[in-house]
Length: 128
Image 1 (tube, one colour):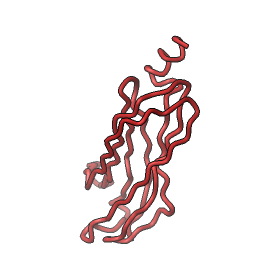
Image 2: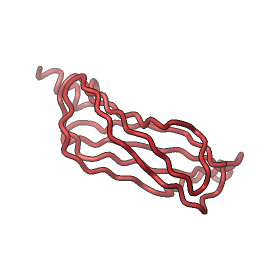
Image 3: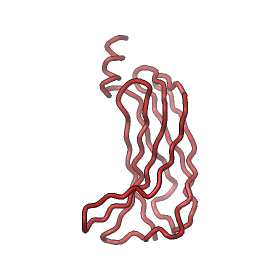
């Protein structure tokens, strides 16, 4: 048990997060409704927060810009092997530029625990 806890603190066998979206293509001003799927690791862990940044990437300059952030504060204890869903509703700005060869978008999601290494996820979306 102690070995599993130490491994989890290093990120091995810790809980994982995955942002689940029903589609990949959205329009400016549209609501995005999905959920975070959290899969418990080898030991129970206390979740502190979930952050999901909508990031615009300019391929021409290599610059990544955070457009908006969704933050969920929680004190949920995720047990070993447990599956936990937390809903997400996000409204895209009506002025967000559409996806082009130079401009792309992704959600960069991070879950933070009271102890241990953060878990991360990325989901590419297109804005048409």
